[in-house]
Image (cartoon, rainbow, N blue to C red; front, side, top):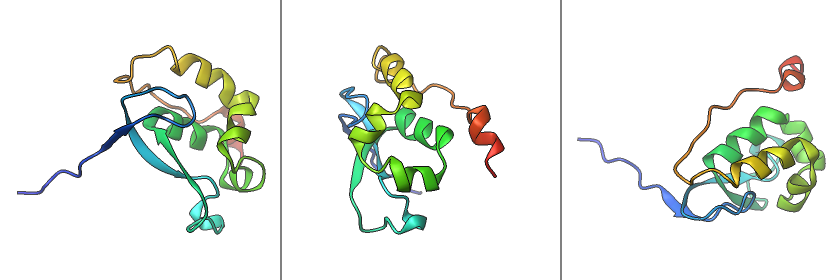
Length: 103
């Protein structure tokens, strides 16, 4: 019988919702040299939304702090919306049209 990994519950550093399942987001993507650089504890919806909106290059170059992410207009509207959602909600995430074109 396989043991399920215990998920951490905490506060998302991006949307600031409490009592949410937390994932570790590398502020500089690992593949861009961020393995040992700062991380942020994010809820699953915020983490998924970041990767749906931005390329790893964009994250490494201009969005490598929580403050820079919060100030970016593309994610700001999502944060405003997700803050009103119950902590149990994990919405469907789709890549932005702009991100789909970047291959």
